[in-house]
Amino acid sequence: MLLVTYIVVGVVPLLLMASTMLHSTKIYFVEERKKELLSEANVIAGQLASYDFFENPMSPNTLEKVIFGTEPEGFRVLVLNSSAIVVYDTGYEEVGKTYFIPEVMDALDNKDIAREKKNGNIYAAASVVGKDTQMDGVVLVVDSVKDVTDMVGNIAQKSYVLLAILLVVVIVIMVVMSRLFTEPLKRMIQVIQKMAEGHFEQRIVVKNRTHNEIVDLALSCNHMADQLEKVDSIRQQFVSNVSHELKTPLSSVKVLSESILLQEDVPKEMYVEFLHDINSEVDRMSAIINDLLTLVKLDQKEIPINFEEHDLNTIMEGIIKRLTPLAEVKQMKIVYTKEKDVTAVVDEMKLTLAISNLVDNAVKYTPEGGSVTVTLDADHQNAFITVADTGIGIPEDEVGYIFERFYRVDKTRDRETGGTGLGLSITYATVLLHNGSIKVNSKENEGTTMQVRIPLHQNVS
Ligand code: ADP
Image 1 (tube, rainbow, N blue to C red):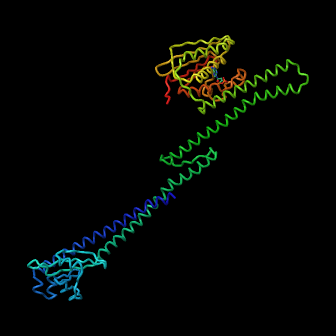
Image 2: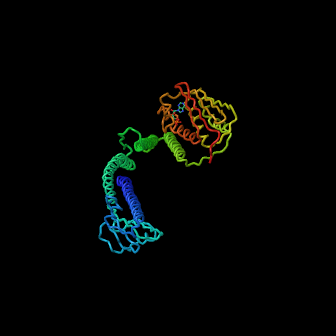
Image 3: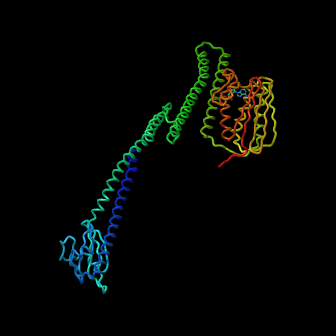
């Protein structure tokens, strides 16, 4: 389809241009010939007037010598008197005939004129003015436009040969262009259609390494496919993680309840113990589901962000107050330092949850007797909340993963600490929602420092 368009766009203007040019050339040559013949007629009329031809008629032979010298020109000359009767004709055929044709009449009216007639001849008529400025007669020069037509025909022939060559060149160029552009586009469409059906492994083969728009488009498509494949694999991984996370407590519930059901005369203490275990497994499942729901909502931006100006110190004090009992259980202290009074535009609920997760982790991953230090500071653009602990730390090669969903450094330990592996993901998503960032600094067995940066102002539209 594109090829046809290319050819039409390339060839039609060429043809139009050629025919217009030929037409104009013909008109130009005919006009030139008309002028030429009219000036011939005028010259002859002048000669006749100077010989006073109509008063002293001369023999055709003498006349011819007067008119043409020795060489007769290629055109026909007729001399007519004031009654439009032919008195001389180079062809001798028309002598005696009356020529009431418009050109003769015009010339007799002292309007010299040259016209192209339908029969393919040019008539140029010039008046012979007598002594008393009366019209003695007319010189009519007749010539066929065949010469001009032949010449233009000749040019046309050559032009058409040239045009044909040009046409072939244009078609070849168009075919090459269509190969260059249309074919890769077609291939791209096929691949994209396959991607749309869910085959994200499809890639467009780019052979040409020089950059042009088509190659860039293909590379962009491939990049998009990479991203889609990544998103798809993250999604699959996520679903498998969720199933796995829920499966473990669910199996425990199943085993616990079956063991009670299958036993006869179960003592009451055992019932209570098993129900207690079942209860904590159910708590665990609901914690996972709650965290998941929070994350999904953060992702979908479903929960409206409630940006308001808040005193961050008040928020921080609230968090510390709520988590202190947890620390005390482990004989730990949470030390809070406020470097400055900081007010920032934040979503109080979301930020509280995000920072609580950090402080909660600091307490969770620090052995008894350790310490957790929380600092609030700011510069003229950002607030900085730092949570530092003297805990177990995170291995260097795992720091990059801790914000991923369900990622845990030590899988067994976390089951004991009751973490869902989603806390940091929630914190990360919340900080992003505030257009901030998190920096992690950690050393194994020495401790971890997490610093959250939140802009003091949000561009709320
Ligand atoms: P969890 O519910 O398991 O705590 P998080 O998403 O909050 O999940 O944390 C992910 C993992 O990062 C944790 O399992 C833990 O291994 C590691 N981690 C987070 N905070 C700390 C910290 N302060 N010290 C050491 N390890 C940490």
